[in-house]
Structures are given as C-alpha cells and as structure tokens.
Length: 85
Image (cartoon, rainbow, N blue to C red; front, side, top):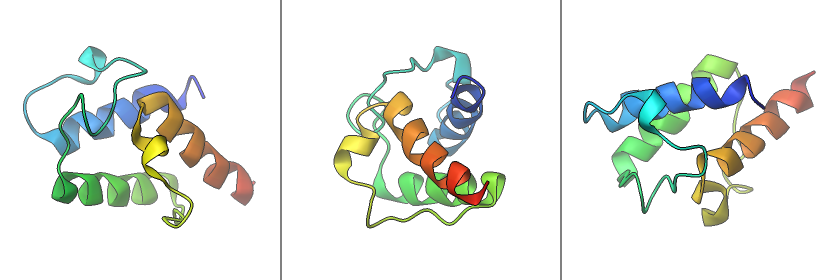
C-alpha cells in the first residue's frame, strides 16, 4: 500500500484542482470532509483511479467509510488491483 498512497494522493491533488500538492495531503485526511471534494470532483477522481490502475471499481462496495481517509480508500483500490492479480 505504501506505493499506492503517493499515486492516490497525486490524483487527489489533481482532481481537487486547488493548487494543493500531493505532499500536503495527510494519509488519514478525510477525502470529503477535510479535503472538501465535491461530487463532480469525486466522480472525476474515481475515473482517474480506474484509468490509472486499469480496474473497474465496484461502487456498490464503496461506502462513505471508504472515503473517510486516503488510507482507507487505498485499501479499497488495492482490493480491486489484487483481484486482478
């Protein structure tokens, strides 16, 4: 997961588009509440993740708890990446 965190943070920073650098995002930052990502940004971010890792995320399995921290979201993505291996 350590390799995944910087990649996810980079995509989050890009999706937020507010000038924040990926390095400024804490591993346990709340994607919705703390980072303030709106629904359009979230959809774009999720599509970026799917494209980057060539996976189809199961949005039925993604509950709000999966967005409470970047680390939790990485676990969700990792479960999809590992399913392909």
